[in-house]
Amino acid sequence: MAIICGTDFSAQGSTAVRAAAALAGRLRQPLWLVHVLDDAIEALDTRARDLLVSAAESRLRAEARHLGVAVRRHARTKVLVGRPAEALSSLPDAGEPALVVVSSQGHGSSPLYRLGGTSERLAATSATPVLVVREAEPFEAWSRRARRLRVVVGVDFTPGCETAIDWVKTLRRAAPCDVTVAHVYYADQAHRRYGLHAASLLSVNPELERLLRRDLASLVGKMPGRGKVAFRPALGMGRLADQLIEVAESERADLIVVGTHHHRGVGRLASVASGALHMGRTAVAVVPNAERHARRSSTLPSVERVLIPTDFSDAANAAVRHGYGLLGHRGGEVHLLHVAAPARGRRRAELEPAVVARLRALVPATPLHRELVTRTHVAYGPVAPTIRDVAERLGVDVICMGSHGRTGVARALLGSVAAAVLKETRHPVLVVRSPR
Image (cartoon, rainbow, N blue to C red; front, side, top):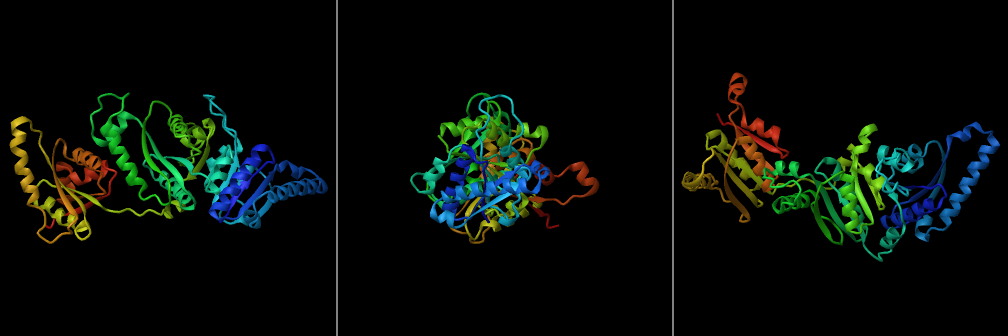
């Protein structure tokens, strides 16, 4: 694997070369310096074409001579012919590249997206992470360990952000980085997700942001290396890209890292990656959500909190043993839940102690790990949506529930709570069949 740097021999191109050399030295990757000639040269005669290629090769070698000794020893140069975005993302001699580095000045504060440009086309189509730099100094200082690199990674709880998080972890393993994990949310959607009441869509709900910070920490997992790690939910008031840029500016970030789903056409106008490239003044790394990168994710899911809903039927109670079996020998939290019909005042006060006692009676008598904790919950409302909301608020890793195993007409008439929960929740669900 190697780092590929595209340069057009301009001042901005030299900036990309310096940044790429700093990354190659710190990440211990070979560096390829590449210049792409327009395919219009194919119309020239052989002598003229050879002269242009030779001149470009000489300039690349001159760029390589200015690199540090350690990087220069493993540096290669290459002149290609074609469209820059396509040529840089598929350099055969370099094998599968680890990173493609180019430069861009961005498009300032214009409210209109100017579609096109090598950096944007490359970020929109490359199956390899693409780093678009504005300045080289932050990367050079980080490579020398003179200071930490300040990184803001934007996440949205979709699979695309996991590869971006893994890429940031690679930087942290190489040298210290201060990382801010940012999530821009819209109040109505976020409140619905956790089953919370939104007093106002224009003000911050502390309980909502506490839950978001918890889930951001769970999503990221252990962050290797040294440097600060902060989790920052940001209430969205406009375009996501604008909000993310504001977070980066407030954190004085050197680099914004985002995942991308490679939107095309009109979809690119709503892309956070595209917006950050257009509007930001900070370097932007775009990490594609390619299937092969997802398979390499360094993070495996762990089960530490299990939610077990029950209506006290035999079918529902059959799931309790399985739920405890996930954690019984290594500790964690088991949350036993009963969803009751709506009740208020004295009726609720009379009901809950008896329900809690019945839930406690379900705890297996088998010896359990001393660090396993059981918590009981009584909730009120429609069963499946309430289970979903409780799972979100508790931040569980798995929902374990029983099923009566109805089929055909019986299922159509009576419905299936397990099926409804599977449809509504984003959490993994372990469904235990009725023992009958």
